[in-house]
Image 1 (cartoon, protein in one colour):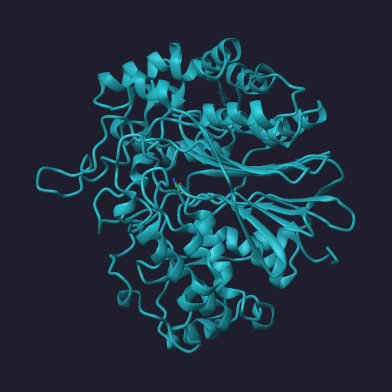
Image 2: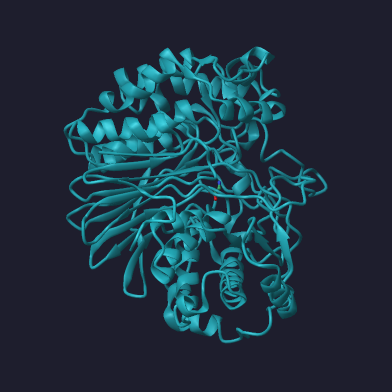
Amino acid sequence: MPLQAQRRPVESPNGMVASAHALASQIGVDCLRQGGNAVDAAVATGLALSVVYPRAGNLGGGGFLLIRLADGRTTLIDFRETAPAAATRTMFQDAQGNVVADRSTVGYLASGVPGTVAGFALAWEKYGSGKLSWSQLVEPARQLAEKGFVVSPYFAQDLRASRDLLGKNAESTRVYLNGGKLFAAGDRFVQPDLAATLRRLQERGSREFYEGETARLIAEDMQAHGGLVRRDDLKSYRAVERAPLHGSYRGFEVIAPPPPSSGGVALLQILGMIEPYDVAAMGTNSAAKIHLFTEAMRRAFRDRAEYLGDPDFVRVPVAGLLEPKYLKTRMADFDPEKATPSASLPAGSPLSGESHETTHYSVVDAAGNAASCTYTLNGLYGSGVTAAGTGVLLNNEMDDFTAKVGVKNLYGLMQGESNAVAPGKRPLSSMTPTIVLKNHAPFLVTGSPGGPTIITTTLFVVTNVIDHSMSVTQAVDAPRFHHQWQPDVVNYEPFFTSQDTMALLRAKGHVLQPRKLYPNDPDAAARYWGDAESILIDPKTQLRQGANDPRNPESTVAGY
Ligand code: GLY
């Protein structure tokens, strides 16, 4: 399609990395140029993001890496955090059974056992090219931590905006708030403790994080401050491989993560529910399309709350949820003229807000291997705790568990019994790293941060390309909307549609609301969300076309 009159994708013939930060994307591409494959580059990019993008890039968090090799093999590396052995299902409630504000989001109790280092190591060992050593993949990140990088205006502002959270922890204050003086644009941001941690990982291997000096430092800091993660928790942590979900949408194959992420199930459910309808004919911003998508989202999120959890602990009926007959039945009461009230589904409570967190990056190499990685600390800068002496910022992923059935989490998500806290269990996620195939060849690599909006953001990139023949940049740039069953509202980005279309939607019974950034955000204006770093492979030319997401000013596509 013609690429005039729009933001052009970055095009390159060989390999490409689209990530949240220019330095990380470049490190990934350097890795490809040195003979590494997409998996090597994904590991090097992720390690670099832990240094240059600490709001979400991490060693102290977890995530999912979806791999599709050029020979057709697919796998999912699950490096989601686990609840520590001492965790209990009521640990975030007081003696009266009320959920204690902030306990699952701020400070030491909020952290699960980190999975990132184990996940990257497993991916490199089993699916790396074999041409680059672990130490070589860690080296660019270590150098960035040791020599530092220049603080951009965006990064300075981001740290300033997070000073309440980071300021609660002495080590985070020292590392990220310049001892309380704050960093200004143009300063050099050097992280000697993190550089030393990365050096230990180079010299002693990835298990050092779980069994060596780094493990000792994390566990001692935890113990000293009332956290639950102990050396045994770290020692027993393992990243695992899972078979990805394979679905289809209008002849394209869609590969996405299985539980403990809800992302793949929800994405494939929504695609299955909208497929019988002629979305292309409805047009991108029509009331008919927004209504149809909203109703499918509502139903998928209702199922998410009811059925999804860690499959190692609860039975998740994945096949049943994706069964075409079931999806048809699920939409049997869809009325093109009327919204289905969420209250007629199991009851929920209003939205509390969201933070922008998590990060997604996409990698394609010259041979056609593809890697799609979403990983996170959960909230922005995680629990706000930096484990003393390590430079490692720790996650607040325990908030992704159900603190109490009927009480919403950080993202306003209602969650169910199947996602209750239990020792060693992985909290339910919405991360949706996705790879779409056309004629059995990789076509689109995408995903996003954004809590529950991850699922719908990914949905829009996929359907914008497939249904509306958008270029990858158009698909990423286009305004988004979101419904998550509870609260029963359609959230929307600026310019999502016209006033008269919104009137049509209200007439059908929808409540339209801008999405707030955090619970008490007073700004009534619509906000943007997500950061869908995406790569499309043009089936005719094989050119890699990359789209960074303009919602993140530092996101960058690099290719060669
Ligand atoms: N921590 C956000 C998610 O996994 O969905």
